[in-house]
Image (cartoon, rainbow, N blue to C red; front, side, top):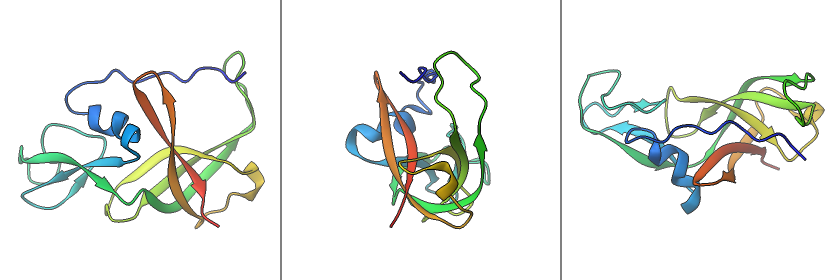
Length: 134
């Protein structure tokens, strides 16, 4: 059995990101004034400081920017090895998520791989993970 993931504390700013998986959506904060995408979510735009920000669904696809394979079990019950990757999201310029690539052996992950989001549910939280696109 895999060790449980630590869950985020939901608040008004991050709730849409962590619960969007219930609807199959990866939601990223978007500024209605300057058009920039912001992650992690916060109440104001990082670029123009506008409060006109809201979570919007993005394609949920992207590219592995870089990755590492973790072989160390950092806690009891943790299954290793696993891939920790940075995924540059399609349609949300400048947003890169640190996540896991799942659904394939770690040795099959490469920089530049196309990936799509999948969600792992824990209570009311949907953790965005990514799978390789064939």
